[in-house]
Length: 107
Image (cartoon, rainbow, N blue to C red; front, side, top):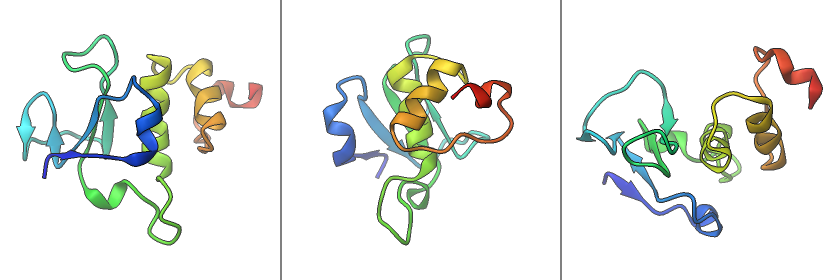
């Protein structure tokens, strides 16, 4: 099941899809280091979010999108890395900012 439809993402035309258990560039079963990653405009398949496991998509107790998925969505919507612009978008989406970003206090 490489591709997955996430209803919450339907309002964002920038999101082309979610690829599970691999990377959209390399196919099902391919591996990558992180739990998930986003393909921005600089990538081969912009607008895709790749996630290693289904369990990473939703919070088990609430059923809401995980912070990881909001994190990747913010990358797609801002077309940027871990910038202040990205951080503001993540916060607006309801996500949490990790402590290791120097600009965190500007939010």
